[in-house]
Amino acid sequence: MKAIGWILVLAAFACSCNQSQKADNLGFENQATAPDTTNYEEISMISLIANPDRYNGKRVIVSGFLHIEFESNMIYLNETDFKNNLTKNAIWIGITREQMESPMMLRCQNKYGFVKGIFDMNDKGHYEMNSGAMTKIIKAAPLR
Image (tube, rainbow, N blue to C red):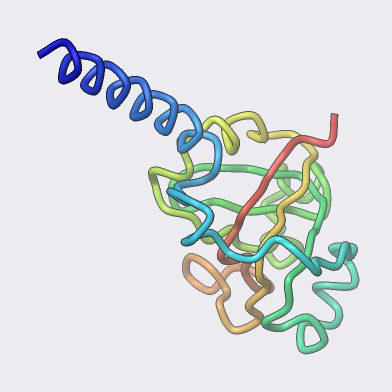
């Protein structure tokens, strides 16, 4: 009987550890379902916006000013473009509402940061406002 009790305690502990990890990895529940994290190219927003066909479908890391809000998840070239609503100088961040509220994305809110994912030049975001989208995002973090 004691063995069953210990098994339940260990199972509860394992579940709680998994939840804390899950909260910071944008919803990828385990390594088997997470995208491959190798071979990402760090590129500038200017290069990405000017040459979308060169990076379409590629694994990229891009830096800029991140703003996370329902129907307005974007990484802008800079904070001035965000303040002036210059959405063509921004890339859509394709994440779910649950991922929007993850600790990883909340740390980036209205800060300069980077996003690591796959670039899709055909996905222009909400109402086709942007110059492409970052999808299958595996990491986002503030620069400072």
